[in-house]
Length: 171
Image 1 (tube, rainbow, N blue to C red):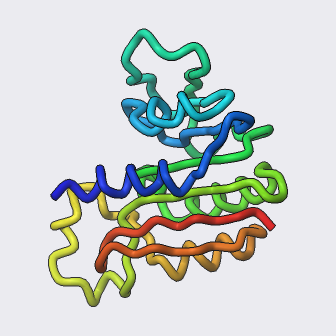
Image 2 (spheres, one colour):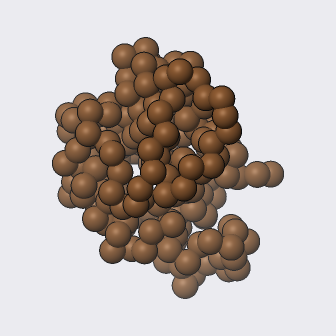
């Protein structure tokens, strides 16, 4: 089973996006989340360090590039991420979450799907089974703590030991 694809579907549904929303797909990769959300929302900003989106794009999808740790989220009501948080080292993950807490308005939503450990990584047998890019995969408890510190109310849904989707409402 492709758990990344399962997580992506859960992220899209958890975003509960509607016609008036401006959504940022942070770390969009090839744009699967952005393209899935586009028919439901006013605008999607597909953001990553490199533009890999297929063309043509729906009229309400805008592509932006830059550092993942410096996203253009001002004015967004929903921010989604799938398999993007772990691309940053831990210090940058914490800084990004703090920045999102400042930029996302009250009652805005942040949905993060990724490899996140339910246990300390030292207790996990064969963490490499979750893919080759898990060096910076955080522990769920760490991300929840950072989200609370940034003013979010996190609700975590785990998929076994190594996958999670965190739905975080900005208080």
